Each structure stands twice: as structure tokens, then as C-alpha cells.
Length: 397
Image 1 (tube, rainbow, N blue to C red):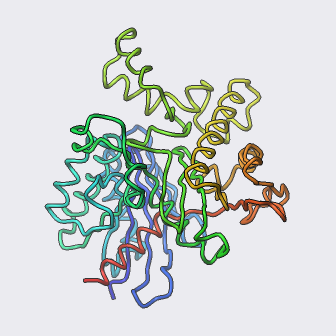
Image 2 (cartoon, rainbow, N blue to C red; image 1 turned 180 degrees about the vertical axis):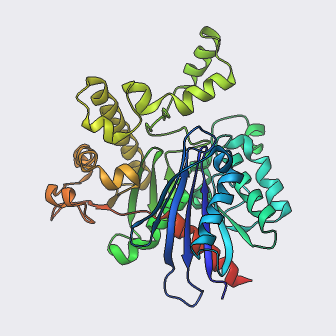
Image 3 (cartoon, helix red, strand yellow; image 1 turned 135 degrees about the horizontal axis):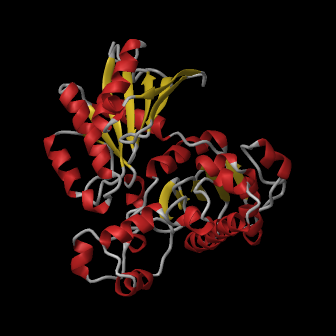
């Protein structure tokens, strides 16, 4: 029975993967393995794999020939899975694709026409889309008859009203695709899916989800549908992130071009790789390291991170006409109790009152009894969300 689904999430220098089993008749998909290849194209690369119980099954350094690019990394992953019985009954591969543009508002089976359309979207996500397309091609070359499904980070936000997606630019630019898209959609969709079971009293109410990690954004939901989000045309907008600045006056870019002589490539490196927590602190993009540091620059970076969340949270609350619940997810949102404390403290004016004991314990509910707005910690699972989409699409034929 071909009930195994492999999920691939290709980043600029990494390849995350998960293997699930479960037919359409099963109540839930069963996780088998998950892991990643780190340091693709670099001198030091590693393959790390754990089983469903979280037990480490492999942690090995890879020679350059086995991780020189994403094609080689995928081949190494498939070899590992084959050696450990992971490709038996493989029925499909699901891919996280960052950008679906204005064309795709739902997962789609990949064929030549879809692949060509996704190529046209590369300029809208130049640091993410090429690697994900490389992963799709690598699988197609190795197993041309294996179904592949693209699941889009932008699709969840297609439910937003037109005003929330608009930019105040000449209409010909809007018609060419320059508009607000929003990202982290698979994460938000995963949260929306579990809310009815976890907290049915707020699931369909006014909810703001804070996906806080190396990439960070907020999403306002009503009826578990996206109403507004902090990321816009690109993954640079909104909150302060690990190496990205978030909201930035476009005049800064004009200044850097005119007075500092920076070109497009220089700006791209600055905005994607040298800004955010790393740029402000000069120390690290990792929140764990900054929280542990006594350097005042680390404190300044954290302060700015929290301040921007507070401002954007107020903006989304205004869009919703108030909020009923605040949900934390992502690497920082799920694990950094100190950040949750500060964000909830800044949101007291909205009615949030935190229960510190529950917060230190990791929730899931971290708001105090009688809090006007409930607060939660919910683990996101983008890969499982992708696997569910793959299974559904395959069942449709």
C-alpha cells in the first residue's frame, strides 16, 4: 500500500524533511522520521534524523559530494530513508513552496505548466523559491512518476479582503503582482486546524497568532481565516526577525543607494542577512543566545523585537475591532517564556493577563483566570499540514 508521504522544506542552505504514513481512511497521519540536512553547499554539512518519539537515529557529517547542492542533499536523504525502510510504499512528495503569487490559493499537483508558473514567481521570493524548485526537479529526475504536491505559504492569506492586500502604488504595478501577499501561511493554517479541539470557545473568534522564530510575523484571524498579517510583498516586512529588519522606511533604501552607493545585491544582503536581531546586537541572530547574554546590545535587540510586536499587535487588534485570544507559536513563541511574558505585559491594555506559572510550564493556556483575552502556546506543525494536504489531494484523484 503506497501510504507514505515525504515532505520536503528546502531553505537556502538546508533541507528539512518528514516522513508520514496513513491512508485517507486513517484518523491521523503517523510520523515516522523527521530530520534535516544542514550546511548545504558549505564546507561542513550534517544529516540529522530523529524518529517519531524524538529519538536521534542519525547524526553524521557529510562530504561535499553528498551535500554540495539541494539535488545531492535530496539524494542523500532518499538513500538514508531507503536504508531504513522509509521509501517502502512512498506514494507522494509534498513541498513547502514560499510563493504561490495571485494564482494559487490552494495546494496543487505539480506538472510542467505549474513548474513554469512557479519559475515566473522567483523574482518575488529570490532567496526561497529557487531552492524549492530545485528540490522539485531533483525528485522528478529521480522518480518521474511519483506525484509531487506544492503547498504554498501565501495561500492561507488569499482570504484577506482586497484592502488588506493592496499597496498604494500605480495600478500597473499592482496588476503586475506588486501587492501584499503574507507568508507563514502553512503555520497559521496548522494552528487554525487545531484550535477547535484545543480551545473551542475562541477558535472562531478574533484571534491573533504570533509566529515568532528566525522569521517572525503576526496574523489576525476571524473564523479561522486570515484577515490581515504583518508580512507583505516579501518576507522582509513587519516584525524584527533574526537577520531581517521588518518595517523599514523606503527612504532608507534610497539613502543607501544614493549616499552609500549600494546596489540591489548589496541591499539584498543587508536586508536578508545582516539586519534584525543580528544587526542590532552585533552578536547573534539566535534569541536563546541574546537572552543569555549580559551585553547591553543584546538587551537592545530584544527590546526592539518586543516593541515591534506590541505595535503590530495593536494594529491587528484595530483591524479586528479587538481580540479574544493571543496564540504564540514558532521556535521563539513556543520556547521563550521570557518573551511571552513581555509581549503579554505590553498587551495588558487589550485585556491580556498572564499566569506566570502556566507560562513557565509552557501552557497550552498561559493567561490568568479572569483574563479578558486568553493567551495560548500552541506548537505549529507545517510539515504535518503539508502531508494532510497531499493526502487530501491524492484522495480527490
